[in-house]
Length: 186
Image 1 (cartoon, one colour):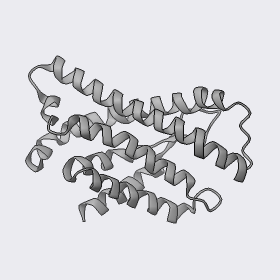
Image 2 (cartoon, helix red, strand yellow):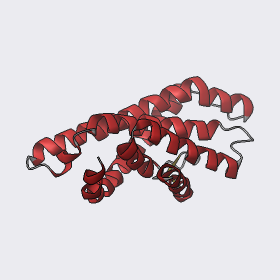
Image 3 (cartoon, one colour):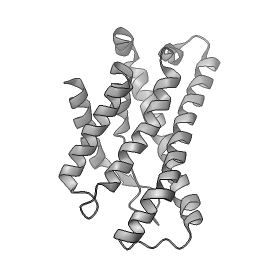
Image 4 (cartoon, one colour):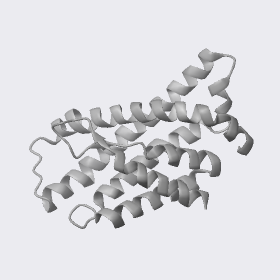
């Protein structure tokens, strides 16, 4: 039940998306990964993936995808997994570092964790755009990409770096407030 609720909450958070690159307004940041991250910490990575799948299916059912194809929703699903799984595996068993007495150790571990998640998100999305998304949109949606390297380096990389940083900041403060509750469950 909790997993479905978190998937539905993540779906609702997708409606508060906003673009950051005006040249590529279809790239939007949302904070739907935060409930997915919470679900992953409480019930494990399979539950987090299931909540992400619920979010993705609800969004696809509501929007119908891009010209009827679920390619954008699939990309969102894979991006979420690329972001939440590194955080889970880095912090699993170490959530106490957020409130550790040795703040330098805690902050260095958190920066490594969030940095790794952001890097994972960026690399996965660059590969996905290079091999799947950009060719698909070029062929089906008549979205020409003249210079793939420039598109990736000037659009996909900065977008995902900013997204990873923003979501990490919000997720950190959200999880930090919930840590006393999480400690009881973990």
